[in-house]
Image (tube, each protein chain N blue to C red):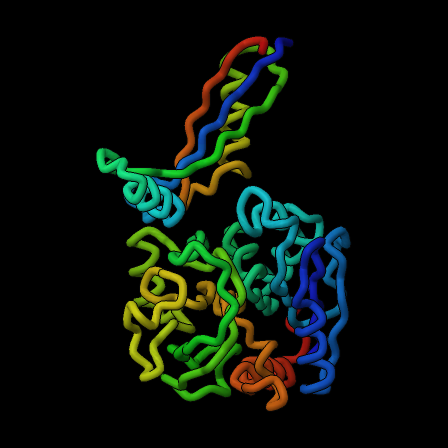
Length: 235
Length: 85
């Protein structure tokens, strides 16, 4: 696996992703700057968390017009894997690479806490190392993570099993109480139609070592590493 | 070419929960403004542009809204156009 991690002005989880891949997985990763025009020779692109362009206008709205995003879209269209975490998820939605949008949390507050998330679908390149229905304790750190989409889009996401992660309570039930930020259908993460672009609000890269309090994010990266080791460079 | 001022009003889509509007509504109620029935909080963008006709100016502003200023999934927009300004 060789991951390109995009740094936008205001990204602040780029090094966390880098460390997760290099120190924990012992795979390769490198940074690309938002003004770069190519993601380079990689088989995974990560759009990390942070506050690109200060979240001006709407979170992710301006980052999507960064020069690098044209090549990220080309890379994804060619079948390359793209992972968007938190602000990266917001950028993917703004860019139209994933459906829907992320609005202000129901609480109106920035929420930095650990929440329960359930894995809904393990038949993806991002989740094959999880058990179906597995409960994860993952960090969220966002003010605008409240997922919304029109009813047709929600129906499609559900029927095509493209809701990959869902907020749940500690018993694993997708209740209103377990809904961290008010997201429709408790959605925490979704995948695109072709199964190569995934966005989620929780931070898997912050839960990859016991020292960090949880390793629940690690299988996401090992799933990808395994898929990419067998697939070779896809783009 | 004439100069125009466009005021773009962006509001949360009708029917969509507006957490910010809800919080302001609750605050108004707690100040005894019980007559308040609904609050939506949006954004006003005022921009100056050049165009060779009213229609062109409106067309340009509309395109700006669709491409960047508003998110069609969550927001509605209205454009007020004034020549000069």
